[in-house]
Image (cartoon, rainbow, N blue to C red; front, side, top):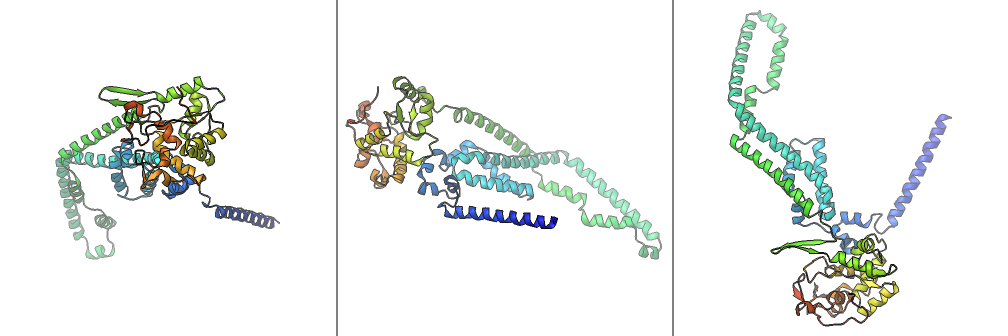
Length: 436
Protein backbone atom coordinates (compact mmCIF):
# COMPACT_ATOMS: atom_id res chain seq x y z
CA UNK A 1 0.00 0.00 0.00
CA UNK A 2 2.88 2.37 0.74
CA UNK A 3 4.40 1.73 -2.67
CA UNK A 4 1.03 2.33 -4.32
CA UNK A 5 0.63 5.62 -2.40
CA UNK A 6 4.14 6.80 -3.38
CA UNK A 7 3.47 5.91 -7.03
CA UNK A 8 0.16 7.79 -6.96
CA UNK A 9 1.64 10.93 -5.38
CA UNK A 10 4.58 10.99 -7.80
CA UNK A 11 2.30 10.46 -10.80
CA UNK A 12 -0.11 13.21 -9.77
CA UNK A 13 2.79 15.57 -9.00
CA UNK A 14 4.39 14.98 -12.39
CA UNK A 15 1.05 15.48 -14.14
CA UNK A 16 0.45 18.80 -12.35
CA UNK A 17 4.00 19.98 -13.11
CA UNK A 18 3.65 19.08 -16.78
CA UNK A 19 0.30 20.90 -16.95
CA UNK A 20 1.78 24.06 -15.38
CA UNK A 21 4.76 23.96 -17.73
CA UNK A 22 2.44 23.50 -20.72
CA UNK A 23 0.32 26.50 -19.67
CA UNK A 24 3.44 28.65 -19.23
CA UNK A 25 4.77 27.62 -22.64
CA UNK A 26 1.40 28.45 -24.21
CA UNK A 27 1.33 31.88 -22.57
CA UNK A 28 4.89 32.64 -23.62
CA UNK A 29 4.28 31.44 -27.17
CA UNK A 30 1.15 33.60 -27.49
CA UNK A 31 3.01 36.74 -26.33
CA UNK A 32 4.53 38.91 -29.08
CA UNK A 33 7.71 39.31 -27.04
CA UNK A 34 7.77 35.65 -25.89
CA UNK A 35 7.31 36.66 -22.28
CA UNK A 36 10.27 39.04 -22.16
CA UNK A 37 9.83 42.59 -20.90
CA UNK A 38 10.94 45.57 -22.95
CA UNK A 39 13.98 46.25 -20.76
CA UNK A 40 15.05 42.59 -20.90
CA UNK A 41 14.79 42.57 -24.69
CA UNK A 42 16.80 45.79 -24.79
CA UNK A 43 19.59 44.00 -22.93
CA UNK A 44 19.56 41.06 -25.35
CA UNK A 45 19.10 43.26 -28.42
CA UNK A 46 20.42 46.84 -27.94
CA UNK A 47 18.45 48.06 -30.98
CA UNK A 48 15.09 46.66 -29.83
CA UNK A 49 13.97 49.65 -27.75
CA UNK A 50 14.88 52.23 -30.37
CA UNK A 51 12.87 50.27 -32.97
CA UNK A 52 9.77 49.26 -31.03
CA UNK A 53 9.62 50.97 -27.60
CA UNK A 54 10.74 54.61 -27.84
CA UNK A 55 9.56 55.33 -24.27
CA UNK A 56 12.34 53.04 -22.97
CA UNK A 57 14.91 54.35 -25.44
CA UNK A 58 14.11 57.96 -24.49
CA UNK A 59 15.38 57.52 -20.92
CA UNK A 60 18.94 58.80 -20.69
CA UNK A 61 19.89 56.01 -18.28
CA UNK A 62 18.97 53.46 -20.96
CA UNK A 63 21.31 54.93 -23.56
CA UNK A 64 24.60 53.15 -24.39
CA UNK A 65 27.54 54.73 -22.55
CA UNK A 66 30.27 56.65 -24.32
CA UNK A 67 33.98 56.04 -23.84
CA UNK A 68 34.40 59.15 -21.65
CA UNK A 69 31.78 57.78 -19.24
CA UNK A 70 33.90 54.65 -18.74
CA UNK A 71 36.98 56.71 -17.91
CA UNK A 72 34.90 58.98 -15.70
CA UNK A 73 33.40 56.15 -13.65
CA UNK A 74 36.13 53.49 -13.43
CA UNK A 75 39.12 55.65 -14.41
CA UNK A 76 42.41 53.69 -14.13
CA UNK A 77 40.52 50.42 -13.69
CA UNK A 78 39.87 50.50 -17.44
CA UNK A 79 43.59 49.75 -17.93
CA UNK A 80 43.92 47.28 -15.06
CA UNK A 81 40.94 45.11 -16.04
CA UNK A 82 42.65 43.55 -19.13
CA UNK A 83 45.72 42.76 -17.01
CA UNK A 84 43.49 41.14 -14.40
CA UNK A 85 41.79 38.99 -17.05
CA UNK A 86 45.18 37.78 -18.28
CA UNK A 87 46.22 37.02 -14.69
CA UNK A 88 43.08 34.90 -14.22
CA UNK A 89 44.32 32.53 -16.92
CA UNK A 90 47.67 31.98 -15.16
CA UNK A 91 46.62 29.43 -14.02
CA UNK A 92 42.93 28.97 -14.87
CA UNK A 93 40.84 27.62 -11.99
CA UNK A 94 37.16 27.43 -11.09
CA UNK A 95 37.34 30.72 -9.16
CA UNK A 96 39.25 32.57 -11.89
CA UNK A 97 36.86 31.20 -14.54
CA UNK A 98 33.95 32.70 -12.58
CA UNK A 99 35.73 36.07 -12.43
CA UNK A 100 36.36 36.02 -16.20
CA UNK A 101 32.69 35.23 -16.93
CA UNK A 102 31.61 37.89 -14.43
CA UNK A 103 33.68 40.66 -16.02
CA UNK A 104 32.76 39.59 -19.57
CA UNK A 105 29.00 39.70 -18.95
CA UNK A 106 29.33 42.93 -16.95
CA UNK A 107 31.20 44.65 -19.78
CA UNK A 108 28.54 43.56 -22.28
CA UNK A 109 25.57 44.73 -20.22
CA UNK A 110 27.26 48.01 -19.29
CA UNK A 111 27.77 48.64 -23.00
CA UNK A 112 24.01 48.31 -23.56
CA UNK A 113 22.79 50.67 -20.81
CA UNK A 114 24.76 53.33 -19.00
CA UNK A 115 22.90 52.61 -15.74
CA UNK A 116 24.44 49.12 -15.73
CA UNK A 117 27.83 50.67 -15.06
CA UNK A 118 26.83 49.82 -11.49
CA UNK A 119 27.08 46.14 -12.46
CA UNK A 120 30.49 46.65 -14.06
CA UNK A 121 32.00 48.51 -11.09
CA UNK A 122 32.42 45.56 -8.66
CA UNK A 123 33.63 43.24 -11.42
CA UNK A 124 36.20 45.85 -12.50
CA UNK A 125 37.35 46.24 -8.89
CA UNK A 126 37.84 42.48 -8.51
CA UNK A 127 39.83 42.00 -11.72
CA UNK A 128 41.87 45.15 -11.07
CA UNK A 129 42.65 43.89 -7.58
CA UNK A 130 43.89 40.61 -9.06
CA UNK A 131 46.11 42.52 -11.49
CA UNK A 132 47.55 44.71 -8.72
CA UNK A 133 48.12 41.67 -6.49
CA UNK A 134 50.04 39.88 -9.22
CA UNK A 135 52.06 43.00 -10.00
CA UNK A 136 52.99 43.56 -6.34
CA UNK A 137 53.90 39.88 -6.05
CA UNK A 138 56.27 40.08 -9.02
CA UNK A 139 57.92 43.35 -7.97
CA UNK A 140 58.32 42.48 -4.29
CA UNK A 141 59.59 39.03 -5.21
CA UNK A 142 62.17 40.57 -7.54
CA UNK A 143 63.31 43.00 -4.83
CA UNK A 144 63.61 40.18 -2.29
CA UNK A 145 65.57 38.02 -4.74
CA UNK A 146 67.92 40.84 -5.67
CA UNK A 147 68.61 41.74 -2.04
CA UNK A 148 69.17 38.13 -0.90
CA UNK A 149 70.52 36.75 -4.16
CA UNK A 150 74.21 36.62 -3.33
CA UNK A 151 73.87 34.81 0.01
CA UNK A 152 71.28 32.41 -1.42
CA UNK A 153 73.58 31.44 -4.29
CA UNK A 154 76.41 30.72 -1.84
CA UNK A 155 74.14 28.56 0.31
CA UNK A 156 72.84 26.68 -2.72
CA UNK A 157 76.36 25.92 -3.92
CA UNK A 158 77.36 24.68 -0.48
CA UNK A 159 74.27 22.50 -0.24
CA UNK A 160 74.89 21.03 -3.68
CA UNK A 161 78.53 20.27 -2.77
CA UNK A 162 77.61 18.57 0.52
CA UNK A 163 74.86 16.51 -1.08
CA UNK A 164 77.16 15.32 -3.86
CA UNK A 165 79.83 14.35 -1.30
CA UNK A 166 77.29 12.39 0.75
CA UNK A 167 76.07 10.60 -2.37
CA UNK A 168 79.61 9.58 -3.36
CA UNK A 169 80.27 8.18 0.13
CA UNK A 170 77.04 6.20 0.01
CA UNK A 171 77.97 4.77 -3.37
CA UNK A 172 81.40 3.74 -2.07
CA UNK A 173 79.86 1.90 0.87
CA UNK A 174 77.38 0.19 -1.41
CA UNK A 175 80.08 -1.10 -3.75
CA UNK A 176 81.79 -2.84 -0.84
CA UNK A 177 78.69 -5.02 -0.26
CA UNK A 178 78.42 -8.42 -1.97
CA UNK A 179 77.21 -8.27 -5.51
CA UNK A 180 74.41 -10.77 -5.00
CA UNK A 181 72.89 -8.83 -2.08
CA UNK A 182 72.81 -5.60 -4.10
CA UNK A 183 71.04 -7.36 -6.94
CA UNK A 184 68.50 -9.26 -4.87
CA UNK A 185 67.60 -6.61 -2.31
CA UNK A 186 68.03 -2.99 -3.40
CA UNK A 187 67.90 -0.30 -0.69
CA UNK A 188 64.56 1.49 -0.08
CA UNK A 189 66.40 4.77 0.51
CA UNK A 190 68.11 4.52 -2.84
CA UNK A 191 64.76 3.90 -4.54
CA UNK A 192 63.23 6.87 -2.78
CA UNK A 193 66.21 9.05 -3.67
CA UNK A 194 66.00 8.04 -7.33
CA UNK A 195 62.32 8.82 -7.34
CA UNK A 196 62.92 12.25 -5.80
CA UNK A 197 65.71 12.98 -8.27
CA UNK A 198 63.37 12.06 -11.12
CA UNK A 199 60.40 14.09 -9.92
CA UNK A 200 61.89 17.25 -8.37
CA UNK A 201 64.24 19.59 -10.15
CA UNK A 202 67.46 20.44 -8.43
CA UNK A 203 67.72 23.42 -6.08
CA UNK A 204 70.19 25.02 -8.39
CA UNK A 205 67.76 24.84 -11.32
CA UNK A 206 65.08 26.50 -9.21
CA UNK A 207 67.42 29.28 -8.23
CA UNK A 208 68.40 29.76 -11.87
CA UNK A 209 64.75 29.99 -12.88
CA UNK A 210 64.06 32.62 -10.21
CA UNK A 211 67.08 34.58 -11.37
CA UNK A 212 65.82 34.62 -14.95
CA UNK A 213 62.31 35.76 -13.88
CA UNK A 214 63.52 38.42 -11.48
CA UNK A 215 63.48 42.06 -12.57
CA UNK A 216 66.26 44.56 -11.86
CA UNK A 217 66.14 46.12 -8.41
CA UNK A 218 65.76 49.70 -9.64
CA UNK A 219 62.95 48.84 -12.04
CA UNK A 220 61.05 46.95 -9.34
CA UNK A 221 61.30 49.80 -6.84
CA UNK A 222 60.21 52.42 -9.41
CA UNK A 223 57.30 50.21 -10.55
CA UNK A 224 56.11 49.77 -6.96
CA UNK A 225 56.20 53.52 -6.40
CA UNK A 226 54.24 54.11 -9.62
CA UNK A 227 51.58 51.60 -8.56
CA UNK A 228 51.23 53.33 -5.19
CA UNK A 229 50.90 56.72 -6.93
CA UNK A 230 48.34 55.21 -9.32
CA UNK A 231 46.25 54.00 -6.38
CA UNK A 232 46.50 57.38 -4.67
CA UNK A 233 45.42 59.16 -7.87
CA UNK A 234 42.45 56.80 -8.19
CA UNK A 235 41.35 57.57 -4.62
CA UNK A 236 41.55 61.31 -5.34
CA UNK A 237 39.53 60.86 -8.54
CA UNK A 238 36.85 58.85 -6.73
CA UNK A 239 36.47 61.51 -4.05
CA UNK A 240 36.24 64.24 -6.71
CA UNK A 241 33.68 62.30 -8.78
CA UNK A 242 31.54 61.57 -5.73
CA UNK A 243 31.60 65.23 -4.71
CA UNK A 244 31.13 66.87 -8.10
CA UNK A 245 29.26 64.43 -10.32
CA UNK A 246 27.15 62.32 -7.96
CA UNK A 247 26.42 64.60 -5.02
CA UNK A 248 25.20 67.74 -6.82
CA UNK A 249 21.40 68.28 -6.69
CA UNK A 250 19.48 68.16 -9.96
CA UNK A 251 17.29 71.10 -8.90
CA UNK A 252 20.02 73.70 -8.49
CA UNK A 253 22.60 73.68 -11.30
CA UNK A 254 26.07 75.19 -11.18
CA UNK A 255 28.71 76.03 -13.75
CA UNK A 256 32.20 77.52 -13.60
CA UNK A 257 33.72 80.07 -15.93
CA UNK A 258 36.54 82.61 -15.91
CA UNK A 259 34.50 84.98 -13.78
CA UNK A 260 33.62 82.45 -11.07
CA UNK A 261 30.80 80.12 -10.05
CA UNK A 262 27.32 80.53 -11.58
CA UNK A 263 24.22 79.10 -9.90
CA UNK A 264 21.07 78.39 -11.93
CA UNK A 265 18.08 78.31 -9.62
CA UNK A 266 15.40 78.32 -12.31
CA UNK A 267 13.94 74.90 -11.48
CA UNK A 268 13.38 75.74 -7.82
CA UNK A 269 11.98 79.17 -8.68
CA UNK A 270 9.54 77.68 -11.22
CA UNK A 271 8.26 75.11 -8.73
CA UNK A 272 8.00 77.81 -6.05
CA UNK A 273 5.97 79.98 -8.42
CA UNK A 274 3.57 77.10 -9.09
CA UNK A 275 3.21 76.43 -5.39
CA UNK A 276 2.44 80.03 -4.41
CA UNK A 277 0.54 81.32 -7.46
CA UNK A 278 -1.74 78.46 -8.51
CA UNK A 279 -4.72 76.77 -6.92
CA UNK A 280 -4.32 73.47 -5.14
CA UNK A 281 -6.59 71.68 -7.63
CA UNK A 282 -4.82 73.02 -10.75
CA UNK A 283 -3.22 70.42 -13.03
CA UNK A 284 0.18 70.91 -14.63
CA UNK A 285 1.26 69.33 -17.92
CA UNK A 286 4.94 68.80 -18.66
CA UNK A 287 7.18 66.09 -19.99
CA UNK A 288 7.39 63.15 -17.60
CA UNK A 289 10.98 64.04 -16.52
CA UNK A 290 9.66 66.81 -14.26
CA UNK A 291 6.69 64.94 -12.82
CA UNK A 292 8.19 63.91 -9.49
CA UNK A 293 9.77 67.31 -8.91
CA UNK A 294 6.53 69.15 -9.66
CA UNK A 295 4.55 66.91 -7.34
CA UNK A 296 7.07 67.13 -4.49
CA UNK A 297 8.19 70.76 -4.69
CA UNK A 298 5.15 72.50 -6.18
CA UNK A 299 2.54 70.18 -4.58
CA UNK A 300 0.48 70.16 -7.76
CA UNK A 301 -1.11 67.35 -9.76
CA UNK A 302 0.67 66.34 -12.96
CA UNK A 303 -0.54 64.40 -15.97
CA UNK A 304 2.51 62.16 -16.30
CA UNK A 305 5.53 61.55 -14.08
CA UNK A 306 8.50 59.19 -13.75
CA UNK A 307 6.28 56.32 -12.64
CA UNK A 308 3.61 56.53 -15.35
CA UNK A 309 3.07 53.01 -16.69
CA UNK A 310 0.32 53.92 -19.15
CA UNK A 311 2.14 54.62 -22.40
CA UNK A 312 -0.97 56.29 -23.84
CA UNK A 313 -0.84 59.06 -21.23
CA UNK A 314 2.76 59.89 -22.09
CA UNK A 315 1.97 59.66 -25.81
CA UNK A 316 -0.93 62.08 -25.32
CA UNK A 317 1.33 64.70 -23.76
CA UNK A 318 3.92 64.12 -26.51
CA UNK A 319 1.23 64.54 -29.15
CA UNK A 320 0.08 67.80 -27.59
CA UNK A 321 3.61 69.18 -27.58
CA UNK A 322 4.03 68.11 -31.22
CA UNK A 323 0.72 69.56 -32.44
CA UNK A 324 -0.14 73.08 -33.57
CA UNK A 325 -1.26 75.48 -30.87
CA UNK A 326 -5.02 75.06 -31.26
CA UNK A 327 -4.90 71.24 -31.44
CA UNK A 328 -2.61 71.20 -28.40
CA UNK A 329 -5.00 73.48 -26.50
CA UNK A 330 -7.87 71.08 -27.23
CA UNK A 331 -5.87 68.11 -25.91
CA UNK A 332 -4.87 69.90 -22.73
CA UNK A 333 -8.38 71.23 -22.24
CA UNK A 334 -9.73 67.67 -22.42
CA UNK A 335 -7.21 66.69 -19.71
CA UNK A 336 -8.32 69.65 -17.53
CA UNK A 337 -4.82 71.13 -17.67
CA UNK A 338 -4.41 74.74 -16.62
CA UNK A 339 -0.61 75.20 -16.80
CA UNK A 340 2.08 73.84 -19.14
CA UNK A 341 5.66 73.66 -17.90
CA UNK A 342 8.45 73.83 -20.51
CA UNK A 343 12.21 73.84 -19.83
CA UNK A 344 14.30 75.86 -22.30
CA UNK A 345 18.10 76.25 -22.11
CA UNK A 346 18.96 78.06 -25.31
CA UNK A 347 19.66 81.33 -23.50
CA UNK A 348 22.09 80.07 -20.81
CA UNK A 349 23.43 77.04 -22.71
CA UNK A 350 21.64 74.27 -20.76
CA UNK A 351 21.65 71.26 -23.14
CA UNK A 352 19.08 69.02 -21.41
CA UNK A 353 16.10 71.16 -22.31
CA UNK A 354 12.83 70.14 -23.95
CA UNK A 355 13.92 71.15 -27.45
CA UNK A 356 16.66 68.50 -27.34
CA UNK A 357 14.14 65.98 -25.99
CA UNK A 358 11.46 66.96 -28.49
CA UNK A 359 12.08 64.21 -31.04
CA UNK A 360 11.37 61.61 -28.34
CA UNK A 361 8.02 63.28 -27.74
CA UNK A 362 7.33 62.98 -31.46
CA UNK A 363 8.34 59.32 -31.58
CA UNK A 364 6.38 58.33 -28.47
CA UNK A 365 3.31 60.27 -29.61
CA UNK A 366 3.54 58.83 -33.12
CA UNK A 367 3.67 55.31 -31.68
CA UNK A 368 0.09 55.71 -30.41
CA UNK A 369 -1.33 58.43 -32.67
CA UNK A 370 -0.36 57.72 -36.31
CA UNK A 371 -0.98 61.28 -37.56
CA UNK A 372 2.22 62.36 -35.76
CA UNK A 373 5.08 61.44 -38.12
CA UNK A 374 8.73 62.07 -37.33
CA UNK A 375 9.79 62.91 -40.94
CA UNK A 376 7.43 65.92 -40.83
CA UNK A 377 9.74 67.50 -38.24
CA UNK A 378 13.00 66.77 -40.08
CA UNK A 379 14.59 68.54 -43.02
CA UNK A 380 16.44 66.00 -45.18
CA UNK A 381 16.71 63.72 -42.17
CA UNK A 382 18.17 66.45 -39.93
CA UNK A 383 16.61 67.96 -36.84
CA UNK A 384 16.70 71.74 -37.32
CA UNK A 385 15.24 74.78 -35.59
CA UNK A 386 16.75 77.44 -37.87
CA UNK A 387 15.41 78.92 -41.09
CA UNK A 388 15.65 75.51 -42.78
CA UNK A 389 13.26 73.90 -40.26
CA UNK A 390 10.02 72.43 -41.59
CA UNK A 391 6.71 74.29 -41.19
CA UNK A 392 5.45 71.50 -38.93
CA UNK A 393 8.37 72.07 -36.60
CA UNK A 394 8.07 75.85 -36.62
CA UNK A 395 4.34 75.75 -35.83
CA UNK A 396 4.28 73.06 -33.14
CA UNK A 397 3.52 73.98 -29.53
CA UNK A 398 6.94 73.05 -28.17
CA UNK A 399 8.71 75.40 -30.58
CA UNK A 400 6.36 78.27 -29.80
CA UNK A 401 6.49 77.88 -26.00
CA UNK A 402 10.28 77.57 -26.01
CA UNK A 403 11.10 80.46 -28.37
CA UNK A 404 8.29 82.84 -27.43
CA UNK A 405 9.84 86.37 -27.18
CA UNK A 406 13.28 84.80 -27.40
CA UNK A 407 14.43 87.31 -30.03
CA UNK A 408 14.00 90.11 -27.48
CA UNK A 409 17.00 88.83 -25.48
CA UNK A 410 19.70 89.67 -28.06
CA UNK A 411 17.81 90.89 -31.13
CA UNK A 412 18.91 87.87 -33.19
CA UNK A 413 17.39 84.85 -31.45
CA UNK A 414 20.67 82.95 -31.22
CA UNK A 415 20.33 79.56 -29.53
CA UNK A 416 23.51 78.82 -27.55
CA UNK A 417 22.78 75.09 -27.28
CA UNK A 418 22.02 74.47 -30.95
CA UNK A 419 24.53 77.18 -32.00
CA UNK A 420 22.24 78.75 -34.59
CA UNK A 421 19.64 81.48 -35.04
CA UNK A 422 16.08 80.31 -34.74
CA UNK A 423 13.93 80.16 -37.85
CA UNK A 424 10.71 81.76 -36.65
CA UNK A 425 11.47 84.78 -34.47
CA UNK A 426 8.31 86.87 -34.34
CA UNK A 427 5.01 85.22 -33.46
CA UNK A 428 2.24 85.48 -30.88
CA UNK A 429 0.47 82.90 -28.77
CA UNK A 430 -3.28 82.69 -29.39
CA UNK A 431 -4.42 79.97 -26.96
CA UNK A 432 -1.70 80.15 -24.28
CA UNK A 433 -0.43 82.98 -22.11
CA UNK A 434 3.01 83.34 -20.52
CA UNK A 435 2.81 83.61 -16.74
CA UNK A 436 4.76 86.26 -14.86
